[in-house]
Image (cartoon, rainbow, N blue to C red):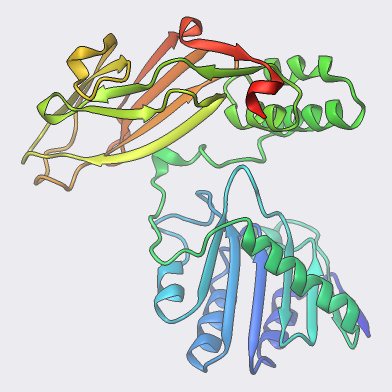
Length: 334
């Protein structure tokens, strides 16, 4: 039995969730609706197994958003998809008996602005089992989350994978693979030159030349120790992020030198830059937080950004490091 709904979709979902006695699985890209969230919490509290996959971006994961940590703490199973494997489905299965599938994200925008639809499907065992199997596959592409770090407003653009420029660049990369025209990949890089994920996709699909780092790159830390950010031999393009906290009370600045080499002592490696971030908020040691975001693109451009998660103050280093890369053949990567 299949029923289609174009209106009053939220209530139709709630009606289906109310029927659950054993298990609810939900995979939606965006989730902001409090009534739907409260219904999931209610079912968890009744002893129903509830599993949820959403995308980790600022729409979902912010201090003014839904309290997904509460969902986890009460016993819900929670998963974030990321920018490399964005989960863009919108479906729910109740007790392996009811399937809800359509265009509707569980958001106020979808309900009040968009023209949406859902199909509510029952008594179609094979179809419903296919969605349950797909949910398990989606879980395998991510990791179960037990402690949720909410994104700050200064990270709003980091996992926004649906920007038109980036979407088009990704589309061109897949077009190059499907049509066997690797020469058009360069146009994708030109459209979204700062999007490392586009370049990673092209690399994974064997549409680019292969480069790797000849030396490790890192920063000096306490006692002249060398903290490696990206290791020698790492394949390009690459990106990484980390969060550090202040070590002194009322620490207003963070200073670091950037080196390349393999010596455990930073001063024994070649220094090529120094970064100083001023304007940190005066807080007790360990309470002010700074995020490092590091990328090397396929052209050999290094970009390191440090910014305060408390006030957004940031500093950016851009440096060409082609001399630190070496091209390798397919035989060497095998």
